[in-house]
Structures are given as structure tokens and as C-alpha cells.
Image (cartoon, rainbow, N blue to C red; front, side, top):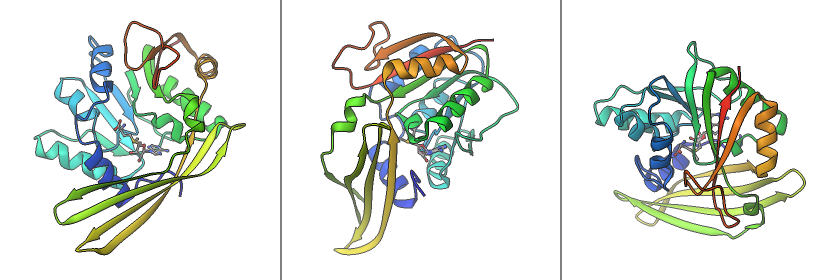
Length: 251
Ligand SMILES: C[S@@+](CC[C@H](N)C(=O)[O-])C[C@H]1O[C@@H](n2cnc3c(N)ncnc32)[C@H](O)[C@@H]1O
């Protein structure tokens, strides 16, 4: 299955991006949510990297994720801090809650994991339905230029007596559909012996800025703003490496 965060993928994510590891995004989301007293939802909350600091900052935030393993990390980190874990297993495409949210945040480009345009539009409509009228969606995207970056990388982490490696290789790029497929190969080594390996088929669809604005409007959003590199005031410059869309749910 594509974009599944299995045992090794989740372990590496948690080592590489532990709770509170910020790219400027955690402070940005916290500041944009200031004054928000109603419930906040983080779809694809993963290990709780962003969700737990926001919970600790006093926000009434809950999240969901498709991966049992990522949610297990999040629950364990909540338990360590004496917090109840407001996370459950759900998917972008089908999630539902009885309450409506004052804000929905989607950091780390997770929306790009929905690679079929029709499905992605369905997810935006679902976000709209899950928000109170006037509620806000904040959603991160990478620049389209990432499609052209096909560099191969290998990285490693140590955890106890385990060495974890991640080798990433682009295997398909489709400029027409704006999609890219990479093979992420995870390995766990102990005493020079391979203990486990896992292949993640990592599929992303990138969006143009104007294209996302149109998609948000078509899904019932208005008052759309685009922030570059987690700067609240300036719009994105030509060199921006991340875009955050902020949009208000129309009635
Ligand atoms: C890049 S991580 C982001 C985690 C967290 N939001 C953060 O900012 O660190 C992407 C997450 O999306 C989840 N995911 C992938 N496909 C999903 C889907 N269809 N529905 C819900 N979650 C999904 C993965 O399990 C993973 O935890």
C-alpha cells in the first residue's frame, strides 16, 4: 500500500522528527491559532510532533492518522507527559467527528499524500464540512519545483543498539499529473546484521499555488491567504520552500 508508515518508517520519523522538532511551523501554527478557543483538528497528526506542543500550549486539539504505528508513538508520548491522547485511527478520505472544528491544520505537506485530484478535492470538501462556518483551514504545501529534484539520499540514525538507515530513490516523476513516486527503503541493523527492512512506496502530488487557491474556492473556502516559509505577514517570495494556505470556511 502507498504512503503507509509501517514500523520502521514510523520509528525513523519519530527519531528524525520527535515531539516539538520545528521547522518554524510549530511556532507559526501556534501564533496563527492564538485566540482560537474552540476545538482544533490535525488530520495526519502522525507521532504528535506538532499536536503535542499545541496540546501543551493549551489548545483543545485532537488528531487522527491512518498509521497504527504513528498513533502508537503519539499515544506513548502523551502518556509520558501525563496527557490524555486525543488521537484516533482515521483517514483523510473518510474521517468524521460529531463536533465541528474552529480550525483544521495540516502541517508537513501531508495533504500531498492524497495523489488523485478528485480524492484531494473530496478531502478539501470534507475539511469544509468539518469546520464551523467561519472556521479556518491552514494547510502546508511544498513548491512545485520539488518535482524536479531527483537527488538520491541515504541517512542513518542510532537508537540503543540499533542502526536505522533510510535510502530514498525517485522511481517515477509525472510532470503532467504533478506526481512523484519514491522508494523509501528502511533497514534496521544490529551488530552488523540486518534485523528488519521495509519498503515505503512514497507517492506525492504537488500543487501550484494558483491551482490550490482555485481548489479551495471550489470547495467552499474564501478569504484565502498564502504565507511563505512560515512568515505571517509577507506573501511567499520566489525562493519560498514552503507555502501555508490559510482559508476561511464559507457558510
Ligand atoms: C509527514 S507525516 C506528518 C505527521 C505530522 N502531521 C507532523 O507534522 O509531523 C504524514 C502522516 O500522514 C499519515 N497519512 C498518510 N496517508 C494518510 C491518509 N490517507 N489519511 C490519514 N493519514 C495519512 C501518515 O501515516 C503520517 O503519519
